[in-house]
Length: 214
Image (cartoon, rainbow, N blue to C red; front, side, top):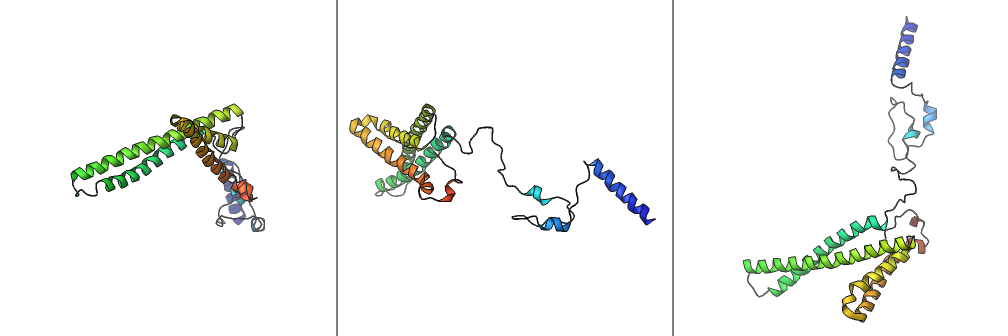
């Protein structure tokens, strides 16, 4: 009778296994003891799953053939321009608040003073956002154009784009202004390139795993 029950239960398990795509392989405790479970909680003994299939040794995203893991200059241009505009607006608002409080310090707290401070904050915020946004737009445009012209992406593009951006941004100030703008752009872009390559220059092993932003 017991044999019939065991055979019946075995047949039921096999039929259910066939119904759900075949029976899963069973692993003994000795086989599972040698499987590393780093970063994972112990599995329930009722889950007949090989833990080796649950360990992720590769990236969890799929890239198209030939695509890079880091975003290019064109993709980063939108983030750079938008971030520069918001940063300029915030800095300009703070500067406008400082100027408004300074210019109206002799006035009593009233509606005209509040309106004057608010106007100063709005004017300075828009001005700073326009300036930083224009610089970011020029830098991104030069970076993308130089990358397409050279067919390579490296720090030479960063330094060249920064220098040309400073020269063009100060082009209305004459030759001296162009020279000063170019020097400022060269210094800032050179410092940024040095920051990107600091791990490589110091021989740190983490440079290969850290993403590069241009």
